[in-house]
Image (cartoon, rainbow, N blue to C red; front, side, top):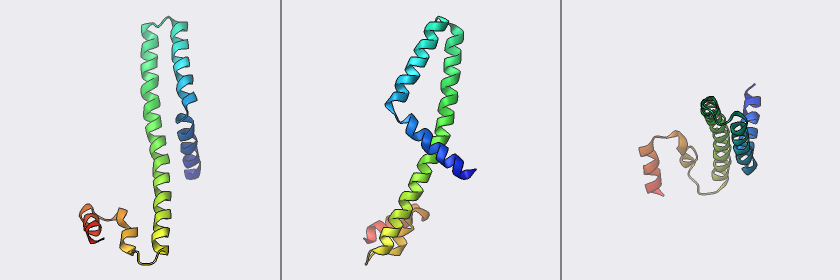
Length: 108
């Protein structure tokens, strides 16, 4: 289930990031507006749909971003561990407090 959600979030992220999606959404909104006469119920339905879509996308895009960040951290950690002279405490910097990270930055 967790893997399905990750793959679905990555798929949605790719689709939403496309310019064709914006064109499609604008055409759907304008098309339904012409069909319904741009009435008050159309405005309410469009507003509700937009809010629901944004809420849904926030969760999916955040999941996709978290997965990408974790993969990037793992790759960087591996590169740090493989290079000679690198300090291992910096490889786990994202798990440390802000002050500790500032101290590590000043030490380098």
